[in-house]
Length: 299
Image (cartoon, rainbow, N blue to C red; front, side):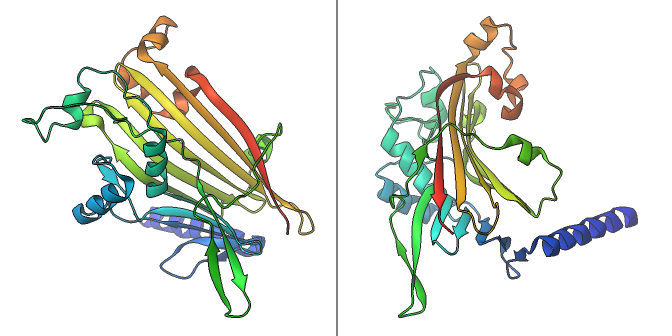
């Protein structure tokens, strides 16, 4: 126990030294994140929605269905202070994307029982996407400095007109693989549903900040045991470069999915237990859609 305590203290000292060497500033006590090279990066973890909040969300979304666990106040925020550009991730906007896209429900005979098991005496009409698959790739707003009042005002409703352009360049994997110290890392769960123990529907966002860049992965992961697996990944990468240059964010979005039947036909296991980690099987899934874009932020 004493050795473990000393190792943790040593790791803490190394992190503190790396923060100081990079010029990063940790956020005040009680907040999780840092300020580095003009970026404020902050994660927030909160408990699942209360029953009252669930009702409010259902009213706003126009749906009587929500995932079993919605972490409605949890979020990840990346704010470029000088330009006011704010990229953030939250459950409400993600579920709004699910509601608007409205994919047809996956055809599974038992699905109606999974989602309505608490209402066994009601007639079930499964007419919505019970997997909560979302096209969500983040929310965007612009915060403008107002010198007159010395405060910030928010412009935009998540569609603030940031100019993402299609591009050929991808994320710099060599830079990501370099042995830089990780100044900040966190994973935020936005919502989750276990499909009544018949699989998983999960939306998470992870962020990693190094002295030269930040990187994040927003992932929707679906596994309906014996039926289907689906991955919708959005990766964002920003290299800090030099102070005089512009900041560029690369965003890669990829939708993959395959049926268990298709995977079995290719010689892969049909046992759902073999597919607990999406990182290990993502390359086995067929690509449905993908695109790469960039956002240029003048310094």
